[in-house]
Image (cartoon, rainbow, N blue to C red):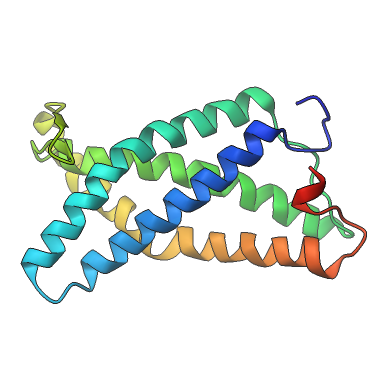
Length: 175
């Protein structure tokens, strides 16, 4: 970071691309779960898995770049707000990394491949680790259904607090 108090332009782009990808992946996951038929659920999951391949690559880049660049200091009028921002930012990154690992592991440990829009398939023969298939499924589903949406809501509410309520703070356009 050139200014340790701000996110770089690359970090800002990474943030918004990740936000878009995560929202799309969550919508696809919820849509598959609520699909009116098995055929529709399978189709939606195929799109979720295909897009997930690219999300895996981007989230890996995002996490590595954040670790390389570091985190700017958390701002907020109270120590509790700064601590909450610290925890939520890191928890979101950790859980995103866990999601992009547990999703493929959920497939690979059952001897399934990641078919990427019919263009190619990624297969990693991990059926010998089938004992972790159920835990990977549990982790992926519970983080995606409960934990990540809750943290994203906290993040969103914190952003509203940061940019709209506390007028002393800068806006994203000031970056």
